[in-house]
Amino acid sequence: MIDKEKIRQAVALLLEGMGEDCNREGLKETPDRIARMYEEIFAGMEQSPKEALSKTFEVQDGGMVLEKDIVFYSTCEHHLLPFYGKAHIAYLPDGKVVGLSKLARTVEVYARRPQIQEQLTTQIAEALMKYLEPKGVIVMLEAEHMCMTMRGVKKPGAQTVTFVTRGIFTKEPSLQDEFWRMMGR
Picture 1: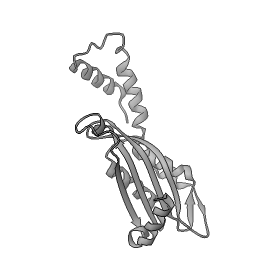
Picture 2: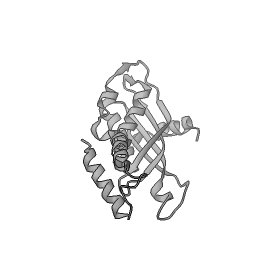
Picture 3: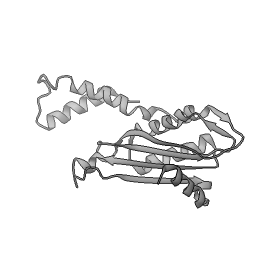
Picture 4: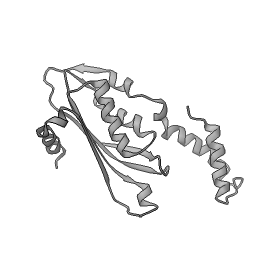
């Protein structure tokens, strides 16, 4: 559970450590604003994708389902700076499908945690395999990391791409080819 009081105290200490006066007008409410913001952007810490993926619908013919360009925002656990981009999820149903918004909700659950992109990609794929039980899953994330844009190498626009396959997509390259065709690549 997020402890807003500890966050307030930490932000005040951080501001003081930077040489700021926490009592000046522009900063008086900053610790409280940051605590409320963290409660929102790290809401995934207390959520599970199980609820979102539990409502399914039966299907006879399980052709590939692709939901692409799901915008996400996350926070790099190494620098506590944002990374953001698009998630692309494909799965091959095994008798049941889930509402399309539930795929985006699954991305949100994991993106709203301190995270690294590689782990985020894997967590989404594993959750879909566990709760949806499809024949297979592909998850691809494309993101820009502010830790590379604002500091360090300072390379704005650089995209990090992560790609995970599970189930039948791992064993049958023709299904990966179909994914790329559906992606328009």
